[in-house]
Image (cartoon, rainbow, N blue to C red; front, side):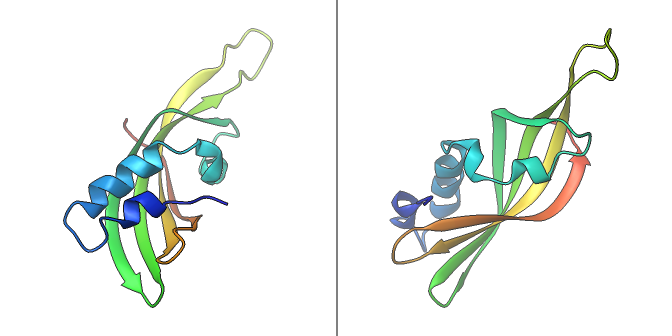
Length: 117
C-alpha cells in the first residue's frame, strides 16, 4: 500500500503542502491513476511530472488534498511511417491520507487534457 507518513510530520504547518508535493513527486507514478487522464490513447510518461497542491482539508481521520499533476502523454503513430509524439497533459487528482497510518489513495477528480508543462 502507498504510504505518505513522512509528510504527516508537517501536518497543520505551512510547510505541509510543500512536503506533500515532494513526497508525491518522489513516488513511483504507478501509484497514481495517470493512465485515466490521457486523452489520445497513449501512455502516461511521468519522468517529468510536476505536482501542485491546490487544497488540503482535514476530515475526521483523513487528510484530503486536491493536487494538479502535469505530465506527458506519449502517443504512438497512426500508420507505419508515423513516429510517436508527446503532448503535455494536466489532470487533478484527489489524495486521501489516513492521519494515523499515512496510507494514501489517489482518485481522478478532473481531466483537463492538454496543458502546458
